[in-house]
Length: 151
Ligand code: DAT
Ligand code: MG
Image 1 (cartoon, protein in one colour):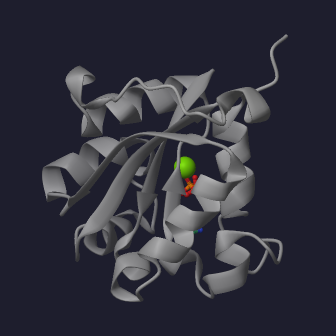
Image 2 (cartoon, helix red, strand yellow; image 1 turned 135 degrees about the vertical axis):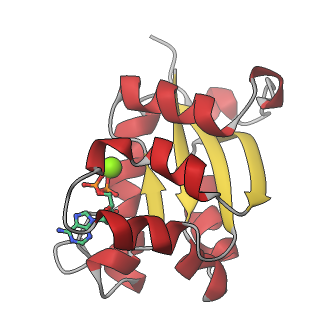
């Protein structure tokens, strides 16, 4: 089982797509482990996007992610990280497949609606930035046996 950090970015919130985006994760079979509605501070944004510091789009990225509230979630399941990236689609909505969140709703790379961790180390780091350990809910979903195949 893996956990990944998903953020519905300010454009997703402002455009009224919170429910639409959550529904896609929910019906995928991934299981919700934590969720909050918040506004990201510049300091938190700088830590979250530290790997992009110095790139020409960095300032705009920090401006955008701190510009309005976001919904931050942890989703868990088998291969949750890769699965979530697939639901999101490629970084640039122009390259994102139809049927993905960015492919269906995005136009600009700098307004691409969602964030999702890109690997296990990144996921652990990012989950720790946004959630305290006690904020993760451990629960059994009544459909788990129909979704997560036992090995
Ligand atoms: P992703 O969000 O798919 O993991 P990333 O980590 O490479 O993509 O970049 C983080 C965000 O920065 C991305 O969602 C949008 C923005 N970004 C990336 N490359 C960009 C570019 N060439 N021009 C403008 N914004 C960019
Ligand atoms: Mg990334």
